[in-house]
Length: 54
Image (cartoon, rainbow, N blue to C red; front, side, top):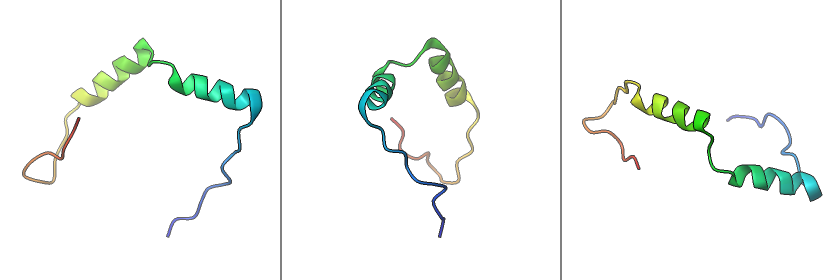
């Protein structure tokens, strides 16, 4: 069984607020471009039909 790499940091105060605000920000153009590029790459499925995708 896999072992944890390390302890999960505990965020408090301003650090926690900054992290949450960052996570709620919409994706940047660069992130959207990367997402489209990754989705357009060739995918080889090991099943007859592709798995469910949104």
